[in-house]
Image (cartoon, rainbow over all chains, first blue to last red; front, side):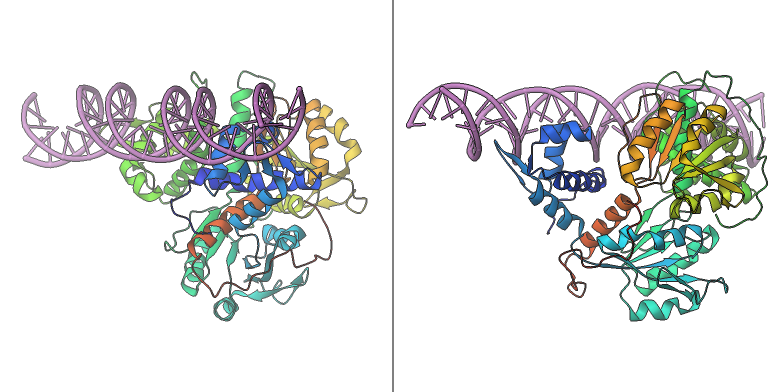
Length: 233
Length: 233
DNA sequence: TTATTGTTGACAATAAAATAACAGGAGTGC
DNA sequence: GCACTCCTGTTATTTTATTGTCAACAATAA
């Protein structure tokens, strides 16, 4: 799995999608596929598929195409999905709990080992068998257990400090759901999931498309609704 | 808000981030900022900031910079955040519920009006005041209520059909958490949040960085853990 | 065998995005 | 009011990403 030249981020971001489609094909008992056929299914040019895959090696065969099972397995190895990952959730709120309850992660080898929170009402509970600990115990836990990924689902004001601590204690990667850009050392990897941002870009596109419409204009100019509780941002 | 020439997706994706940083500046009572200063904060080149903003108009002033409040408000309008959006959640599982409970959405004007599910144990319940209806009622609901965005948080096998129905009934946009690429008409906008994909790219990067390490290699070669329940994918 | 078709991998051409350069208007200090 | 600095908006350049093309080779059919 040694990489001579750097692979572009655009390619890496497409890999999981290839992996998913190949998995689907496998389930449909399709044993071989050409870049052209895959192109039609995935709405990518065949050229790009071939070029993407060739970043990692020549997996295909002229006159035949790609063997689905083989390619699927190769991408699995490229993505590093052939091993287990130990994860912790920091922030046991809505999203944190939802992720713990999402059983598909475990099927793929993403194992959430513990949840950390400050809320006394959560501490001591278990969520689908995963225990919730006090954040105070986090340093000790990380130093005694190998933690590959910390899932950050906490208010953004707290996230910055926590991320810093986690990095210091040796967590390798952070999957960040907090609405803030984390500042961590270069050897710690951060993948952001900014849900609000994602929704906003959708709204932009909706507005762009329906910008001439008038029936939509029940508009409100401030921030009109006061929420009942102020959970986390 | 009329758009003459098409704005590139890369720019649109950055807009929410600008909006967030400007909001932060506003909270810190900073009234003006130059592209250079903002560049330092955001880790983007000043050039790109200026070019991005100029897609929408000349918001700055030579020798002065950008007025934070003004620019913040302009981006708010560009993103369409100066009105309310009616949303429904389709699929009342983990993630669906978490999103309903996420109060920040409402603060911003993203109002979840209803949840739809097939599970009899959920139907009739309310989640933070939002009622859960049978999916059978969805067509009627959509035809009588303006639904801007449907949030899809259901198993992928069901998602394809549901998305098709929703499009037919007049939902404008879909925020898709299902692990599948939806095929919908051109006038319906889809924004995907593929959490698993996002996590996989993080794992790729972790593996790339630590690829020489050996202490990590407690590897398992198949899919070793059988989950207790098979909820949704 | 031998021709024909299909398909990759490599590379060239094109398009898109990011960065740099710069002309000139706006503020600032005297 | 004048010189000088700051900083935008815009154009040019560079970099990155995508698409198109083709020689080489495998599979298949004649």
